[in-house]
Length: 272
Ligand code: SAH
Image 1 (spheres, rainbow, N blue to C red):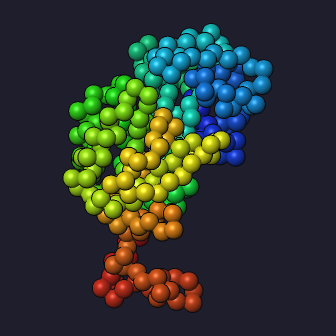
Image 2: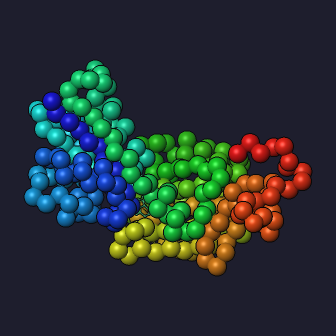
Image 3: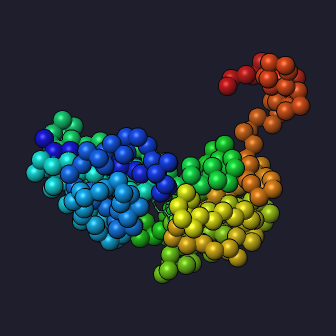
């Protein structure tokens, strides 16, 4: 029986790849992926056969992977970050579903989770997620812009911390401009914004700026942005969103066991 591993190899450095992702690549006869990704895990691939495709050829890539696995091979389809977040996992399932595949049929499929850009970027920025957040891809390659704009607006109105994937490319430059203007209708211009390029790769760059000033920073294909919510603070170039219990604890009131004493008005509501 053939097998497809759909592997998220994390942000790019080997240290941030999971053990299972490494095993999956090592156990495969064929590696399928976008060229840049293949290059990132080149050392691990060794002399295994590789099928490299361009970025806009995701469907072809998924179909080829399924065909190869059906012929009895073990195939690793690689994505950066997590393969289930704007990655290849969904497309592989779509191709299989189209063919009437069911669990237990040939080929076997295993999705190997990875550290997504949002996790990598958040770690470099400090602790900006901490509370409810929304991830939005600004790429209108597969999604109409009106849908994306509506989601940006809904997330902005609901005070979610917002992670923006695919913010801008050579040809796609207006989405981030429109996104900023939607956000400014709901958030303070001083809201902290983190901009991280190439997290855990060569030429990594980490900037913390404000909503008002964000467009004056370098933003491109390898960048993820994190827009703070109304409680997010900038602290010496880091970005921190409080855990959300401001009214339930006082940091100066920790007792000797290191536990946080609840504020009087929160007594009896220790759900978490
Ligand atoms: N599956 C990937 C996302 C692919 S979409 C994941 O889970 O991370 C491609 C977008 O991901 C890029 O435009 C960028 O916004 C983000 N991205 C991927 N790797 C990144 C990295 N190392 N640093 C910063 N952003 C990254």
